[in-house]
Figure 1 (cartoon, each protein chain N blue to C red):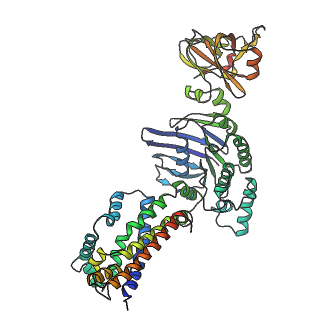
Figure 2: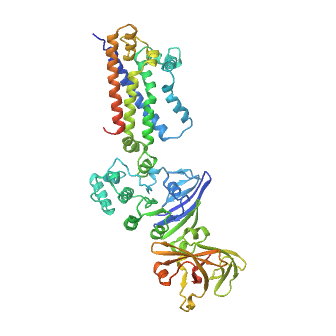
Figure 3: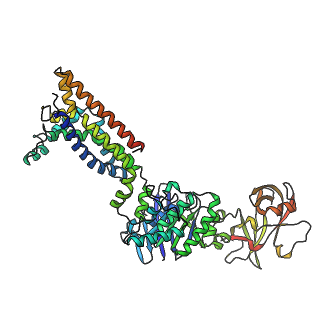
Length: 362
Length: 218
């Protein structure tokens, strides 16, 4: 089922203006808290009325401000998974899941609910009430309740944010499996980068009520089109510079922060143009002092002093003072590399950036 | 032998008053809890008025509204319905007095059923009436039940407004509180004591029941 929308809404000191199109897939709406992601979902479902715009689900127009169409929530056939699930507290798991099913014989209902209960791993809990369920069980019960009415569109609002970190991974896998079984056009909202990357083949980055970029996850991750997208994607090293030359195999950029940098050739850049560029912290290689440098990684060599390091679980974050000494380059390394090379604060090291890892923000 | 008429009349008046209070009050409470409209605050203040204005003033308003010289009174009179100085007047006085005591807890408990739960039901294809019946009412019934108990108690104790609208006609409009007043005035201490005992016992039972509803131990 296709979804096509164009929405505008003005609120106190904030406005939404988005256009989006998707096919039968799972699209992730990714962005910081307060970017307007949930609001977009609520407008699609009909819980909040846009000021202007249109929404089409398949060939059906459910909202059109120009044509005066505003299909009520109950007729939109949109499934919505609330952040805190909104299970009916006075109904059992079975009661919740069967609540929306209509026009079926009793046996057909039992069969359908039973199937959903199996798929969502809730067997044996049919007669429990929501307050007797764990967070993950509640989430799956809410999902089953939504799927029971066979929606043509599924909207998931931060479905994992209320859960412990340990169970999230398992539940994400569950969601991917369930989605494979019931391939419904889905939009999932999250502010968790890892989650966005795991679940969305396509990601739309939302910031301040606007969609800054829509693309495959590789696109938004490695080829951000704005500084904000680069920042949200964790490409912490974002610098300004001036294009020096565009001939030859590389584009050369001169940056007041880290000096001259070679990037892969980008079309449409002119010498003298001001640009931003970013380098992902995990793409920076530390050069071992006792080895000669492989010509493949000789594009950009930077030297600096380690300002400080900080642990991040399985990896270490290392900040290197480069340039005139007031610019910090963030580098992410596996713990063992740090141990093996004895990288301690105050040591001077050389690092290499491959030119294909220097992304010029167009 | 003590005259049981005031007791029977009080139960009858309170029963009808509570029935109308709950019916009208539920619509009002739901509207106030779930809808935004122009003049909502004014309506709220209006419903709550009987809690603060003197019952005699309330009674005077009702008397003016339903008296034969008013438009409404004349209209009802032409239909053969008499309100003033009848037991129906006592019902109206009790109803208006007890309305705020019902609307307040009922509205609070209806508001307590979150928008999200109702939206969840809407998303599952339910109509507003189905949602009220299957989601809102089952989750809010304790507050509504508490409101009914409070309204009934208020109706049985109604004195000032009832006296103004229905008067004090023994055997016709003399309710229990008015009978007590009458007994004390005429020096009939025995009757006064018995009637006071009945109403005190009743009040205890009511508050006990209301507490059980609100604490959810029913």
